[in-house]
Length: 291
Image (cartoon, rainbow, N blue to C red):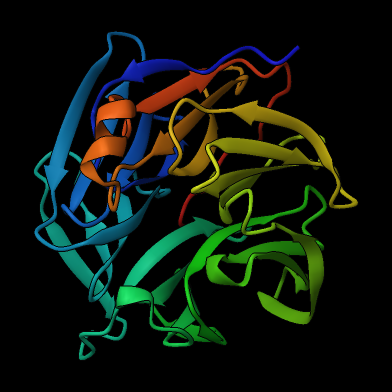
């Protein structure tokens, strides 16, 4: 039986997202998107440090250099974990007021993939981008509405991808060396009755952990796209999971309260909190941006 998630940090993030384990620092990183906050949580002592970016930030990833890279409102930046200073790498849709960067992840060759989304629910305004270690940016997929969860199969032959408002998790053939994606097709669908597919991550067995926005749950899907397990959550806006800890056997889950009315905020007192459970399986080490 799956253990219940425990609240480990009552951070009350407005739009918590993008948890990722920084193994070198033994910290869990995640963002509060619209506030422009990058969180650095230390599980050993429960302390949480906040770095203010000064603009919305959709994702953060560690690098081989020891710093972080973020997907911010106007593009990709390096972020110094000590000083909090940012340095622009490349602009992405910086001239647009109707989109922002959202979730992202790093592939096995150290390339950072992150996408944009239309604001105010406008469809087909976003794209998926790939930041290479040399600083060049490539548009890989367009149009999308809410570019979201992305990860790869253990053999790196398949890329999983979510455009949240489609209600689909899609898969692509992935050419690892060149970083190319082809042959998009359906992997799984999520009915609006149970929520929308949000962030995702693949464990060491090749099973996919999918957060359900407005669904109050995390689903584990097998490699055929069928639901293997369900993790009920005490809040409805569930955004993404990350495996963490020295053994990668702890599953952290970010949540949000943005858009909840006052009644729901009263019912969901810990919406926006950071949750954790031990699912009995392990994850895979997060790749680092190689630039």
